[in-house]
Amino acid sequence: QVQLVESGGGLVQAGDSLGLSCAASGRALSTLGMGWFRQNPGKDRDFVAAISWGGSRTYYADSVKGRFTISRDNAKNTVYLQMNSLEPEDTAVYYCAASLQNYGLASRAAYGYWGQGTQVTVSS
Image (cartoon, rainbow, N blue to C red; front, side, top):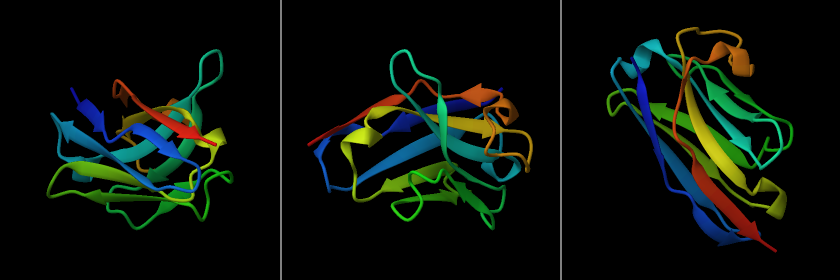
């Protein structure tokens, strides 16, 4: 069983930066594909970014490409999402997710483990 705990959310202004962390336990991070998703009330949970087991491959939603960066530190069992040039449209609850797969990581269906979520609010 994999447990995921997100941290780092908060309230920021448009144009600011914010970093999220996801601490994993229960399984070696090096054997997990990792992703970030986000969701607003009444909306679907949307893909934001993902990273392969070793970190050699990263994937981004078009809406965040060039602004967000996903990374991982397998020794610390932690995945990060650095968010720059934040926009009000980035406001959402952000979820960390873990997959036993090393492919198809842009799809919500690939993930079997989810964190509890952390709120990110961007004011205009």
